[in-house]
Amino acid sequence: KIDRSQPNIVSDTFFQVWKQYQNAKDEFQLRDWISANAKKYLSPKFKRAHPNQGFALLGGVHAIAMSLLPDIEPQETLSSIVKLGYDTDTVAAIAGSILGARFGTGWIPIDRIMDIKNLGFYGDCLVDPSSTVCETIDALLDREAYWTKYVKEWLEETKSVYYF
Image (cartoon, rainbow, N blue to C red; front, top):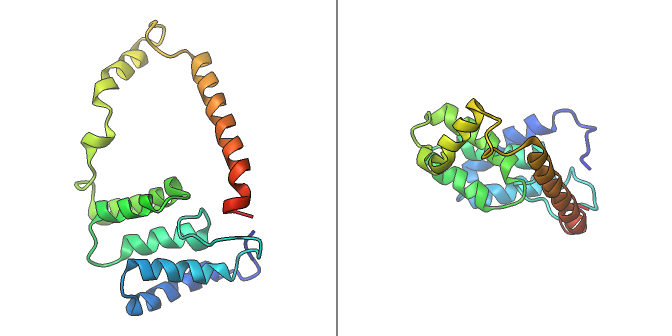
């Protein structure tokens, strides 16, 4: 739970991040500061304020701050965010959007994210969805149900460790 009684917490935090950056030795020290700053607004039951947790004061501030630092390589910055774990899809999506706006798209390793091997297969299924090689809607829903159940069980098991 986050203390929402102060409406300017996020903007004030950004102001403090830039002031802190002036004194930070490196991105790790800045990440530690982001976590420490957010901790005072979190519920006492919150065990750890990790910079990649999916809250505006943590993941949001972390993504924006890292993406706007001077003298960075976008791919290295995004990689360092993902390697930290926690809510990497949210934090990396925010950072990636800013990095893309700032640096363009030339740094994105298209060959690593495009599934060239199966791209033709996907195209064929779009053209002729009745083809026997295409996944049926029932198979898709079964697979999604399995992963939804799996994630819910994992979240329940790790809830006491990571969040409350």
